[in-house]
Length: 525
Image (cartoon, rainbow, N blue to C red):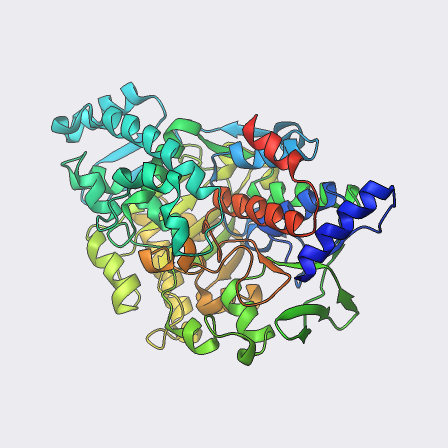
């Protein structure tokens, strides 16, 4: 009998006899969005939950960077598809919109193309068609067809994205068979979008969202055409205080539920009994538990913490051979003055976008003409900067760590290139306005945020690294270990990271003989 079967039978027997057992102990490693969501759900189910966080604040890559009265989101700035997190909040008796007020943005973002043309992307499809008519009249009406097809596609794929995948046998589920005709596994996202739009700029406009997964749209599977659909159907939202405020509030709620969050307490070593993880050590304490949830970056934490001899499928050697997402070069700029004509979100597409993608994913070199993204949230939220100032966030997709790029010598040059590119789209005075500046390179993602190879979006989402070929939610190599976050199924991006917490929490609670009715009822409401 496995330990978890014994726990389940013991719980059932105790309930029948009216015996009160002590709460099941769960330790969560990492206070990122997945770890916090799991902590809330597990605590609500009656578990005694402790969260160990290596940094001085919750949120991980969704934490805030604060200085001199400026507040920046460290990582994600787009809040998409709030349904999943809303259901998680509902399952623990909270209302997401009450806890973290949000504003739906319109326009969602501005897209500018170096080769000419721009779009103020809005959920008003008629307004989108009027803009499309100005530079691609043959494609008027294609957006409505794309939306209708992807509405059906999401309906078919939701059961897949909301269920664990433990083996190839799971590919034979009725939900997979039902969705099969929408899958087109050999078709890339870019090729899929070419079925709708003849103008290459429009293909990019509805495919660049592959960058949320850290991939080129011409390498990303066609399944992910649902990403841009989610933006137009369900909105691009700005939480008051930024996306980091969502994680911050989740930490506060978790603590109010009895979760113990230990900051500045990285795991230094582990205890194993055969395949079973029995305890974690930090410099401050030793933590035993009935189950452990790992929300740290999967490849980084496993390679540094679990002995290599205890991992076969995910050994250090095999981790090094996996495909990883791109990284990002980040500038956080506290600026004097307001840029009132610049939208909340802006994406600039390089003139030779295909070359830029190749430089990131294949050549692994820095581009002289990169695409980039600017967040100018002070046009929406004045709380993020001192009066009369702006908190501007700049992201440039770049290769993950590679021998081809030495950031100790290239960082300053690339910063100047980035500011030059911003000046070319109308921000010519930006250098004179800088009052605060912070920078993150792929090396910093690795050293400060413990991200393997600085690959900001974790393991790449190619067909060989999805579903059962991704690390399993109930980790297949260690007993009593569950994974949440971008390194497990369903993958990267806030909505699916929250979903991973729900999948893994269900598995863990059922293994411990505890009810998941509160999760299931909220999800089906």
